[in-house]
Length: 180
Image 1 (cartoon, one colour):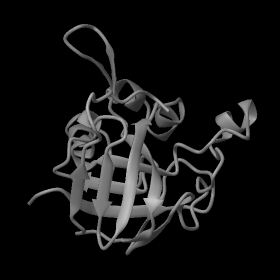
Image 2: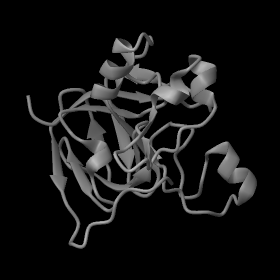
Image 3: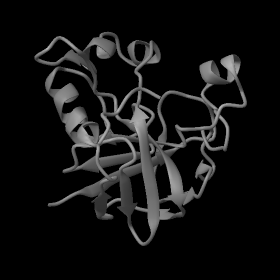
Image 4: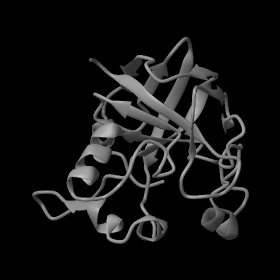
């Protein structure tokens, strides 16, 4: 199957889940056209309250469909867009990518991965117990955040379900993703 986009989603309102669409349009330096989180500066409410002039490193949110599979197996009802992601992928280890990885999608869109999504209490308001399900510990006891990755838009373009994803790693040394 390869690395593909399985769904695209957006919402013009600040809400937890986003609507599935036939396509979304990425705008360089801003994010997903028409999405509440698009902009050069932060749009996430808690970050705006702290400093509304911060650069927006969360212009686009990607979640791997394999997380949905894992959550469904654990008894949660979740599908594409439900966790607030704009792009749902399959066949790509998003969480294992280094900071600065570029994702080339469709006919020219380019995303730079900036970091991990730090899950918040809204996840438990969506479905009780889901916060614990998207957090884990590795073999060394370190916290593992599984709720997807965030990125900025380097080149705009339309993205649709079925689009291929090409991964371009940054120069070494690679740096592990951190919450943004």
